[in-house]
Image 1 (cartoon, rainbow, N blue to C red):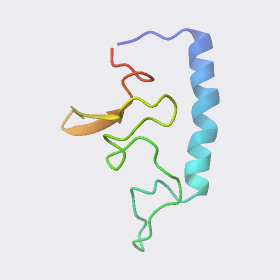
Image 2 (image 1 turned 180 degrees about the vertical axis):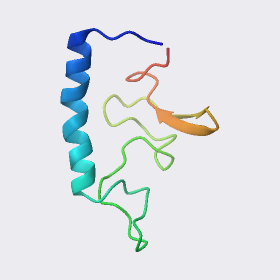
Image 3 (image 1 turned 180 degrees about the horizontal axis):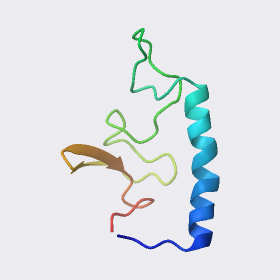
Length: 82
């Protein structure tokens, strides 16, 4: 398990809280549907649809990896796996 400093925890909270609020305001991710079959309005940047495409931040190729019975997509340059 990784240990985060108090400053790192505060920074993570500061960044994640408005992101989650925006996702909720837009009705969820565009990769998911609501009870009426409508996709959410939050545009997914790193996901199954973007695997193999260039990262919008640095241009590296977005990679898809298996993880705990599912999969994750990440930019190897911006989000290196530990």
